[in-house]
Amino acid sequence: MKRGKVNISTLGCSKNLVDSEMLLNQLDLNGFKVVHDSEDDDVNIVILNTCGFIKDAKEESINSILNYAEARKNGKLDKLLVMGCLSARYKSDLENEIPEVDKFYGKFDYKEIIKDLNANFFEQKMYRRVKTTPNHFSYLKISEGCNRHCSFCAIPQFTGIHKSRSIESLVEEAENLVNEGTKELLVIAQDLSYYGIDMYGESKLAELIDRLADIKGLEWIRLHYAYPSKFPMDLLKVIRERDNVAKYLDLPLQHISNHMLGRMRRKITKEETIALLQKIREEVPGIAIRTTFLVGHPGETEADYEELKAFVAEQKFDRMGVFSYSDEDDTYAFKMYEDDVPEETKEARAAELMEIQQTISEKLNTEKVGKTLNVLIDREEGDYFIGRTEYDSPEVDGEVLIEKDDRIEIGNFYQIAISDSTEFDLIGSLS
Image (cartoon, rainbow, N blue to C red):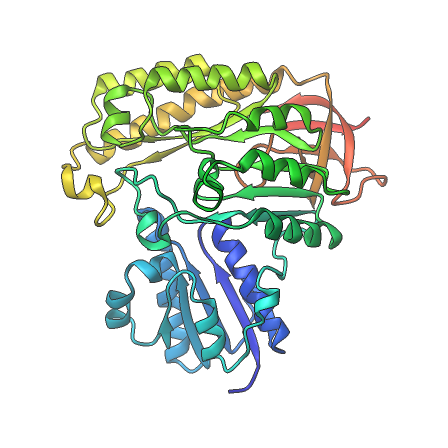
């Protein structure tokens, strides 16, 4: 088969994006022309990297497969390959229902994909990537899988058990990324808190982040998805003392009532959660905490929800997301509970929680007006440069809108005087 041009289209989370970047690099090394999320008509091979996390994500993945399958059927593509979470989870069903796809793969079948394209897999360059993010920030995936088995989550079914990568290999990858222009590293995993336990017999997250912080030229390290149960407390000293570790922590809590935490199989209590949050804020003054909550899980009563509302209002999280429960095949909740919260109730609870958060966010942003903050510039858009503070992660958090100035360049840090704010964003100018 001719080498041609390959488009890898990525759906879902940043962990999928890292997988796509690795695959793009392998194909590039083999002489393929490679593009990512391209809408051009001149590609002859499409690899779709799917998401299978929740209902909406699955629907988006299926619709994308169907759209590309139509193009394959009409002769506009030589090959259509599908990989990722949805493909791993429903492989046999998808094969039967969408025969236009040349082949479906699991989540980690990189070598098989390369082989099927009559190419060679370069083992020694497995963790080198073709970047799809702006050059100044990169994701670093430190482990695969998850051992937690929360009631609502299907992820362990298609990612398997937790598997950490070695500290040495991660430091080497990070050094390569920094040498190529990365200034901000977003450390990601399904569960950061478990890092190292499978490989070293104890949590090694603090040691890893400390080692990464030694890399010259790396100006921000940001942590995503730390599990609250058995949280590695020695990490807090590293966040507090290392200047290039952002005072930012993504800590998905999911709920707060003991009734719901038990049904969700979170292995932590309300009291332990509150104590953890207090400890984090005491150890790292000024830290921004991002969290996520799930509403409408089977068995969630009005009293449970009211308890969650009060908790959100009291804790005043810097950043917050809310999801509505959806039944996921073969999860504990799917097998053991009835989906007994009406959809309209789920949606109303999610909307109300976000309204509470909007008020909190607006107040927190107002308090930043008049201050000068260190801001990383991500892009230019309309009449503004768009950047982020150390308290904001790309895609999911607020941004800083900065008046156009000839002295500003994308990918650099600047001191920005904040002059105004909205519910989620800040407005300022070069100080």
